[in-house]
Image (cartoon, rainbow, N blue to C red; front, side):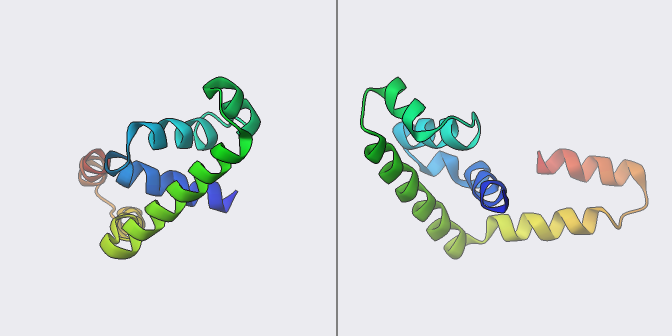
Length: 98
């Protein structure tokens, strides 16, 4: 489960750096919770092609995060937000993060 959360967060940060095919396949697997076989059937390709696509996209997302650290920075901000007592300020900052 932790892997799913991690890659979903990375996808939220970096999906604009992926091509449409990568986004579609990754989204079906991680966000729509479809199996690799279901995705393969929908796309008319082999299950191994879907597995390779997902693995390659995970590697790209990991590479982007290692270079840019966006998710790590967002996580630090999320933790700091829990310590802000002024509700209006906290809500305003949460809106910026969305």
